[in-house]
Length: 160
Image (cartoon, rainbow, N blue to C red):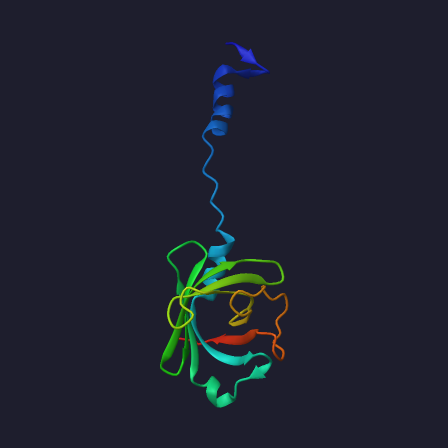
């Protein structure tokens, strides 16, 4: 019987076979899809302020946000309710280090078709967003001050 490196031909074939027929490596989840999974849900608004002006507790009680998985990778469909009037948007979420980035394009109302740039952070069932005005530079801090054109809000997931 012929040997190769001290192995018989049959032994060498058996040892080499797994190299060509390796089991498929599980595909890692896309980071944007992981973020979408964290965002999907119904939320109450804990804090909402524009230009540094906080909304009163009574007004916050009329607000809610519903986020659903969008039709493309890394997209969320969001409805921001104030009373009976929703503002809808299609959000492109990009994961990041200390915070992620989000571009929200309004799909109804007077700002339909306009995009606002923002940042977000997820901490368990709490999400914080900060958006600039339409056509303004993306914020790099979670803050809202007099006349800065930023909207800051904090959401808390509503348990089913």
